[in-house]
Length: 610
Image 1 (cartoon, one colour):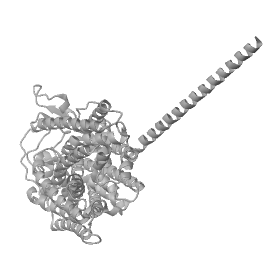
Image 2 (image 1 turned 90 degrees about the vertical axis):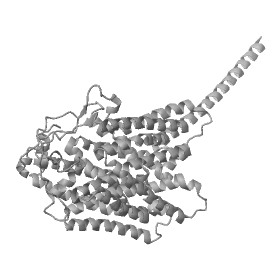
Image 3 (image 1 turned 180 degrees about the vertical axis):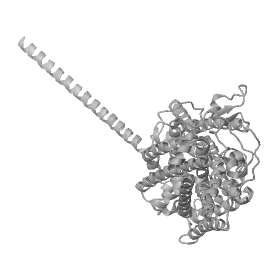
Image 4 (image 1 turned 180 degrees about the horizontal axis):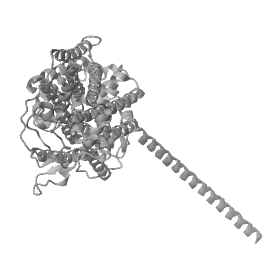
């Protein structure tokens, strides 16, 4: 973006009041109390079943709310409005991907995992292939968690820094400690009920701020009109070019594998589905989750349009009121709700809550995976449930501390929504490929899964690392839609303004000499799709090459329902065909006997006649 003059602005201070601080503190105090309650009452989460699955007594509604809170996260809460503000509404077509995804999960992965009732989805890979494949998947999940969780923690700390001025290095450890505390003490029950409380407050506050913002601009019609004139309304960009940042294909189609893994195979999510009493309850929870995700994304998307309509002539990022686009929503909330004390405090508490909900979910699942896959095999079979539960709680603390330390690396990188999708793509495609090979392809074997998963991981890692290096060095840079600051002089009595250039291309490179290889220009939304396709194709080819007559038959319970039905029909057809062949042979033999007998009689008659 080209600036025609230097900006000299005295920033308008938007900050917390004492009421905001009080409500913010109260929210986290309640979360801690929930953890203390479930950690000190009843059976005190003393067994692994209670700690990981809530004793399988959880209801559909709190599980669905917890799932929505975990999937919303601070990344979505701050990242989606910023995405719409900077790049337009094409991202909202992910709702179509979510709908398709629910159908896929309901008929493929969820029935298999629920029937097996495993502590971790990666135990499935041990049963289906081998312990080696399971260990690879567990390591991939741990890596992906360490790439994802720091971004989740960083986002609300960034928002809190924007509104209070408190340093990131101070607020991040404090709030993370609260989450580690109630997750460690209260297990899944504490996680689910704190998620429900926090998510409810977040939605109510966000809805209130959205309505206030629309009214301040002149209504929803005015928001739509200004967004359309600013080029923000875009839903069906059908350009098939994969190097474009956002198109219909990259959002509505390429993100299906990402949602399939995160909702259908992720142990952090499946763990909640295991906590309800029946498969039908689990499927209903998944449907509620999908409705909630689509609704929240629509609300957040429209919030991004409201922000653009409000600041379309005075962009806070251009004039320096904020440092990053991810701070736009926090700035907007403080600006709109500054006349009503407490709203800003509840909102920022909500941002933190969504982040801590995701953090608690992943920490709880990480503890189960690390214990089950890496600690339990080396422990005595007579280890008590209480000792196992305590080890998992200690693991939560260690993992939480590591993730907090990694936050300060994430601070040096780019926009959080883009980062989370790109980093998630490193391992997501390989993991989804392994589960797909296991549940949908009876002929896949251990060697196929091994080669498919590893080669897919290496190829996508290479793509992501090279692309991030190009981004860091400025060789590749995605430019936003036009931003303007002409109106700032009128609104803030600024004598010097910023004038934006004409609309810029979505992707720009430094020079033809520095032009990167086309593979590194592919949109980050395609990473999981490419990784999953590679894992499945390589896995099937290697399985076919290495197959032998000694391969054991796959247990039908390890296959998704429609594959089971197909195999049953095939086996019946083979059986009936074999029976038919036997009957046919018998009939032919009988006919031959009759012919021989008949010929013999004829010959005898001829002899007598002669």
